[in-house]
Image (cartoon, rainbow, N blue to C red; front, side):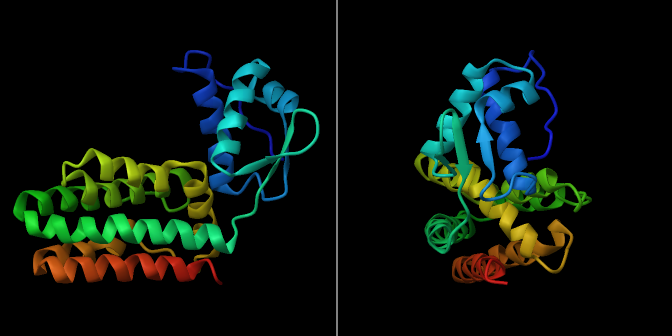
Length: 216
């Protein structure tokens, strides 16, 4: 397992920071499936006590990303076929619907999505976390405009949980082409302007195209 930088003790909570640091490593692929995570070793690397590390690991276990393995240890689960199917089906259920509704809401909603796409311009494609955050912001913008906190919570569960991070890392690991993030999503804005049917169809096609990357 690669060395991780110590955590800034001024962070909001050490458990959240530990979770974020480990999740970032899963996203970047520096902690690979099958790797063993040992509580004492992680606490030493992150320069914090075992308690917040334990809390972070328990959270990752609840999210299905790691499994217990020996005393104070865990093993990182591989992203399986079922994980891919379940996450992408959930994305289709939320985001395709959101695209249709955003188009129905009209100009203000479209402007919000367009601003998120434009904000992604210039994202460093070599920075995995930045690429993830830019993609997240664009897709979340479709749901934000609906002003439906339940749908937004569903979106966040899919995208921001450990399995979502690992899935995105797997996507980047298998993607053969790098396209500017704003350019890759511009067609979704154009589809919004074309109407609800076009918006829903475009989002479903966009998600389906991402899903095929994992099979490469």
